Length: 277
Image 1 (cartoon, rainbow, N blue to C red):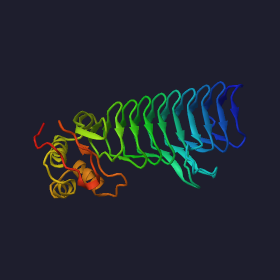
Image 2 (image 1 turned 30 degrees about the vertical axis):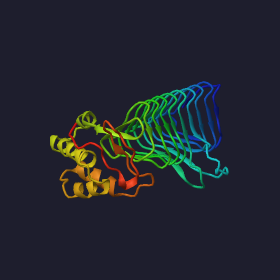
Image 3 (image 1 turned 90 degrees about the horizontal axis):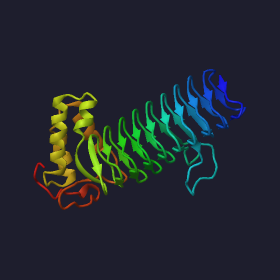
Image 4 (image 1 turned 90 degrees about the vertical axis):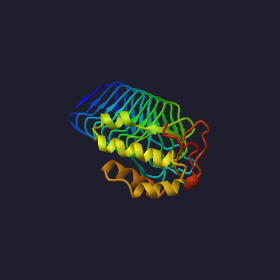
């Protein structure tokens, strides 16, 4: 174990023998850190926090800090990071805000500089939280979702697999899998580039393209479009999309964009456009 002499490591912490701790880093409380993980200079890992193997925590990042929630009473709660999670300079991930709850970050997720995940967030595997993106408490994201630079996400919002939030997006409603969201919670296209890079088949790309048109370009009420879509899908990607749309939503679903964009209101959202643009 390589621990710099200026680092402070709590006696209660459990560190694998291969962990590296850099200058002036602080590990406070009953922290657990897995094999080959690296805590760089001035980083802070605190509380009931667990890091998996091969994690890399950069300078001035804070992992497991107290939640910024006025209801928080100082009870024991958790922050759990999977394997190969990278947290860059100045990013922060807070622990749960109520007793025995947890913030959970999946394997291979990346937080770029000054990004933030609030209390009780649950992120899947391979999620990207880019520079300055801000996730409020209780945000849920499926595998490989992408939060663009300085995107802001309201509490209890769900983000589907391979959904892409554009830089500066302000997201207050659920974004279904494979969709691109920009501006004020506006869906503008399906994420064809991301799907190709992830290895989805031509059949799946075509089905998601048709699904986008059904949901946001058909002129149907959103709930009716979802019902129609449920009877159409044949691929795994299509079934994943329908499953997300049929599951419980606390915030409602984002609406499709057009030249005259309207905001979604739960299941009553209607697209203004009927073209295939």
